[in-house]
Image (cartoon, rainbow, N blue to C red; front, side, top):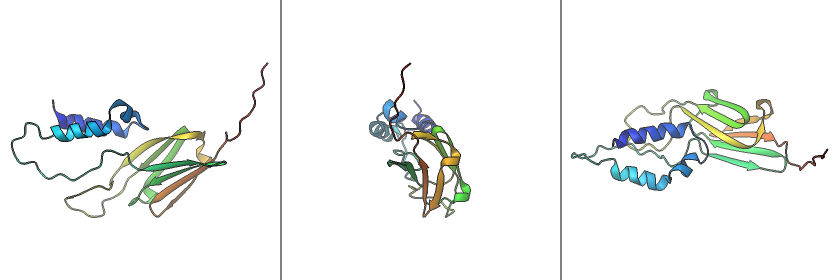
Length: 159
């Protein structure tokens, strides 16, 4: 079995799935360990140095808070510029896309920060419209807020 192709397929598939889909399908920690244990299987030569990349989390890291009156989404986007970010919403799906340029041109020895293009779909706790979202980008943090519509229980009449 070609483990490198399987790893590439998993990384590509993770870009298009949101939430805990893959955590439910595969236990990430055991799968990652399995891949590490089997990546060099069948190779006789010394392994080449590879840049270290984190595959255990999606990019960007996101926090979502709900208060009595609003929903707040905070995305960590250090190294990105607001002109290169795209935000769109459809119901309760928030799409974050962006691109950055490398800070240093060279061969990475250790690379844990995300660079280049990204795309992530985030499931919001309550639906909203794009014209109701306020967005602010400051110090590498993208903060989105919108008013809650369903913060009070409403009685439904029975005919």
